Image (tube, rainbow, N blue to C red):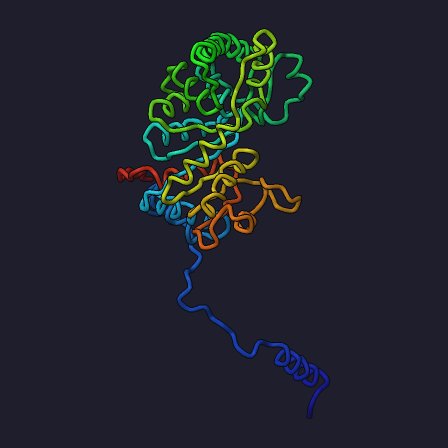
Length: 344
């Protein structure tokens, strides 16, 4: 005798069979999702290697590390672009390491990436908090970049340093008839600061160009304004900046990009590579999204559509705060493993 419940069960089975896939792929042989085994103690290279099988952005970061390794194996010209907040943060020391040891060949940054490198040679930034009221900081003469505090006295030291520097550059312009472009101006700045903690110092010492198309967008721009008030014939040649970076791209057999953050620094590096049909390798690290059409948030696929990255280029975007992802990328791709291990 068939009961009401058994009829319902049979009907449910028939419906399930109707909508079930005719073929189920079991994905045998695909990489399993596994994380690092801390039972073996802490071994940094092993931890970084384990990112590849962790999924999500850990896997993207692992792909970025492999792409950065490939850039070095293929001896491509590596462009490192970064926004000013990378220099505000501890990533300044990571960038300095790469430049000091000639592990990258071109830098592209914003005005803050120039001035803050110099300011930190004069006096450090300090750790604060994200949630301190802006009015209270303003009344105390403190500027805030996230949870990093920069008191106004830092800019007073910077202005004092720059007054002498502007005088030197202006004298060269008058005596030699030479109008500096931003990267030439920045090289002289690196030589003048003479501080081994500085990115610009090592860039100048190692003849690594530092391009900054937006040099006047920041405190440097304010100081240029004041200097030009009393020296109206003082000039900077931004057209030469474009020629220098494009010539560098054209004279490179292959180019690779490690682009931290977005903005003008990211776009200037990408745009220059249009002249050679795009980067051959590229790694983005940023938290911006593409929904508003910004170049900062655009994925690599958008750059491919413009010819800024080759269609077949090994590429990845790592959606992560660069103060987390970039040191790990450098550790995984640019620093030799000395076998160090921290046991339980």
